[in-house]
Amino acid sequence: MSEEEAFKMLKFLMFDMGLRKQYRPDMIILQIQMYQLSRLLHDYHRDLYNHLEEHEIGPSLYAAPWFLTMFASQFPLGFVARVFDMIFLQGTEVIFKVALSLLGSHKPLILQHENLETIVDFIKSTLPNLGLVQMEKTINQVFEMDIAKQLQAYEVEYHVLQEELIDSSPLSDNQRMDKLEKTNSSLRKQNLDLLEQLQVANGRIQSLEATIEKLLSSESKLKQAMLTLELERSALLQTVEELRWRSTEPSDQEPECMQPEPTGD
Image 1 (cartoon, rainbow, N blue to C red):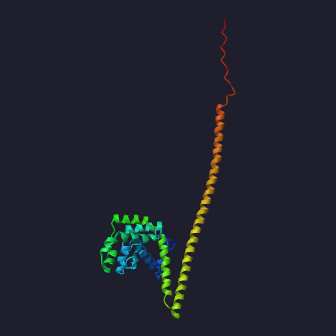
Image 2: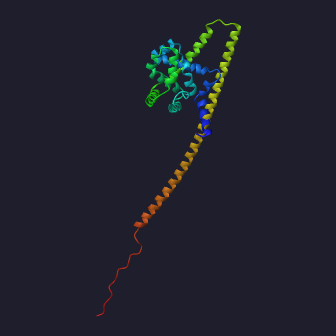
Image 3: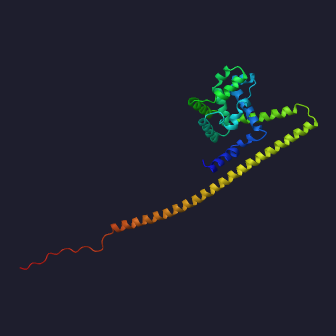
């Protein structure tokens, strides 16, 4: 891509695809993503989830770079390119699907390790060395998975748990003030998110309106061209009929019969 095209693609990823949220200073979105991945791992690979929990290994110890770099920090470039293709096609939930597929396909090997250091080292160092067969298997599994509803449910669940955690402990005046300030800050962020979404939506509306205007203009030109062609067709048909009529019309002057010359006796 040219520099301008690359910048437009970056803008599309950050705003339209929503990746910008996970790079904010508080990284709250990344925390939510790690919780969602943990819950999905519990749903799809319970034995692996229990094994990791037993050794106090949360997704943030190994999966944070996957989400922050779209797997580019540790995986082969060809695999990363395929991941980006799927992100453009299906959205950011692809990152969860790829993570689940990778962990699930390497589950027997991960379960063989029995301490935190070797498990984390395996996931960070050995797991990313994918062969072509493993890569294609992962891609195919991603297209077969549907986790959209689970992701939404687990995001809501995370917020509810955070609120319950705060509400369950008695608060001093300072803590109440801190809570109100955090709530206020959260509301401001939500307003900014909504404003960004509104700007993106307005941009799309303007783009669609411009496209519609171009299509209407093209439609008008095509109708005019069709009308011109119909007139030309009618004129040509009329000319053909006239030529046919002239070719079948009998001649006005018949040729005179040849009379034999008289002969003298």
